[in-house]
Image (cartoon, rainbow, N blue to C red):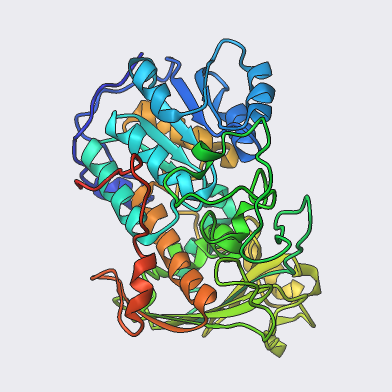
Length: 457
């Protein structure tokens, strides 16, 4: 069954909005018992994991990947799905056979693949971070409304019980006024086969293109460059042409809870401190950095300073005696602390298991009389099922493009400071960097001919 409804607008339902859900008026519903026909763009690594979860109770009708090795592995599990290397060809041939699309490609191709799907009225699930630059984020947000589709960014933590506890505790004034947030991610480990790989030199030298990879299609809308084995298939995230480093990758997890609970919105200032020798090249992420975000007052909420530490064994955060801990050694991989006037709260790199920073006996007593759970829980903490259920029930998931775009934009303003160092003053209403106008070239990046999407919105 194919949903051909498009170009419809959303309105908010007051009751649903309080739970982070939007209502899609007038859209044709899928029966909860009907299977959706799903296409996957990007089927290796994260794409393979997403495929397994999306496939439960639905039909995977098309697979698209530029890497034959990734494609062949996925095809073993979905032998009846049609196979493509170019999503544009897939849509030309199968538009009427697809209801929904999952996009699990590298960051730099999220936008073009997602826009192509939405222009055909297809519901979309997109890996985090939602897009590669701020203009793309704003355009995806606008397009989701314009085409009347059900959207979801795949930051799994937004479906958890833990992130709901954080917001409920903050809303119940357990923390008091929160003016400081600290977040961190551990040492960035570089090397062949790791998450991040540095090339032998900058600019990266030219290597032979593997026979299994369609390099031209892999580059998508980005300016053409010679292939280097450090780019694909795994470690593209460290290169700013293709990814947004650790901050761009993990902020949608680690900063999700404070962004939602505190209603942070867009920072008006970000400032990056990068240790001497940590800059590899302005086209590649630094080894380590500290980024300070500043947010204005929001309604009755005070101004907030959020400090992100990245690449250090332990973050340089002053431990307060009332927190009941000596150090953060148990959270070397990553974490987040919200410091309130009444209490502080800590999580790991994801918002799954929050706890108040206080002695165990006091925390146990708090849990026995904890605030009521007012936010609906997501079954199985499953963002894939949340999205599929939303398609069938005319609702939107919590991390829909309205929310996911704003969360990612906060991160990308910080990434620009991290990339170029120093302070950036950002006017979110005008989508402009005001103190360093040359950096506005990175708000909307140039695209190659044939990959122009979203220009008419």
